[in-house]
Image (cartoon, rainbow, N blue to C red; front, side):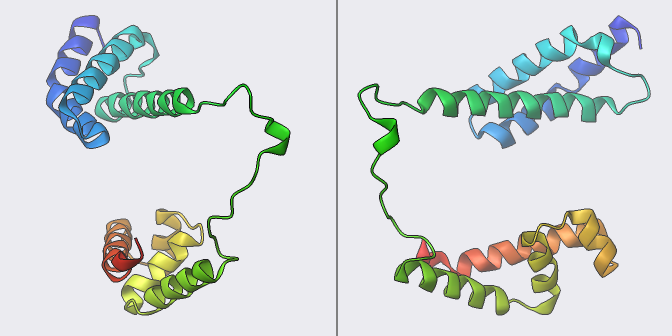
Length: 167
């Protein structure tokens, strides 16, 4: 792909890029910054693009990676350690978990909520939380990939409604 066609394709993707950036950042200003950063990165890495590859997918993958890297930078910069703290003798606070009575009750409620799901939702959701990937679930249950994603989405939504009082 020649340079002018590459730039033309990139300009034609600006609306997709803005929408995707907004879905990642949930802020218009941050989304615009992400679109700019992505455009610069794409232009500077034009030589790495292979003609037979999906251009839109390539660009949006770059955007997602920039977003993730920026997120990790922010998290690292907000992790402040007091220089006067003895890191080897930091007191550990017991704020719950599955070993406390409250934590074990939460686990029982969550398990009961999952068990109350209909079989069409429970089966793919249980496989998903057990570590199976979407495509593995689709193959195992012999259903389309989109159906697996939808059922997991609906299971999450139903569980959120059932367990809303725990939050």
